[in-house]
Length: 208
Image 1 (tube, helix red, strand yellow):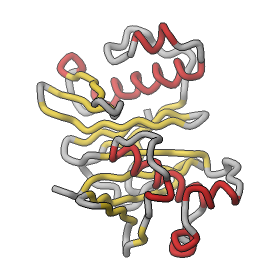
Image 2 (tube, rainbow, N blue to C red; image 1 turned 90 degrees about the vertical axis):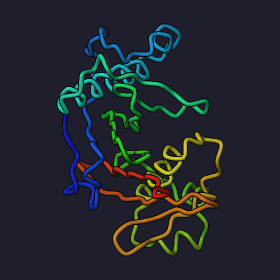
Image 3 (tube, one colour; image 1 turned 135 degrees about the horizontal axis):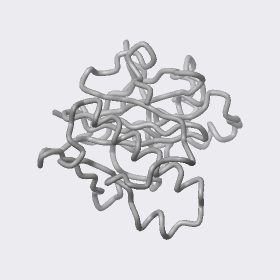
Image 4 (cartoon, one colour; image 1 turned 30 degrees about the vertical axis):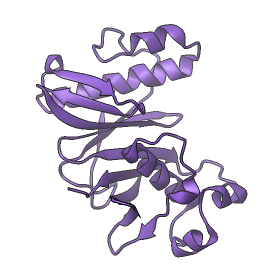
């Protein structure tokens, strides 16, 4: 397990515990957080390795925080967004993965979403046009396409709206020390940074 800090992602809140590990084909199968139905029904071995590795990472994170895994449960809301409960109290939870890593974010106070991609991932110019307007691209001219992509995906995960939302409707704004997204009664703060050639973005609700 490798902990991600504000040295990697500037302005990362202290209440967010963010970590990653390398996807392993040797992960243990005696983890209480495994989705046995997913493992038994999918034929995609890579998907299984990602799932098992992410739940092993979660287990390690809980143990490092001195939280008894026996008192922690993983659930999903009707839209498929994961969340946890520790001794009956809600814990905000988000997962992401790249070809090499699984990542997990935990917070008892901030409703968060995380996303990550390799910084050298091929990103065709026409794809950027499909996820951001010309005005938005111009406003975020200091950001790489991968940074824009991961910030939008982090927003989607924080909102729990899956892939149903047109990413062009997720309009990211540059603030003085972070980024933001606002829509109706929703306001999110967004931060992004790089760790070992991986772009990592975190979004969380500031409604409270």
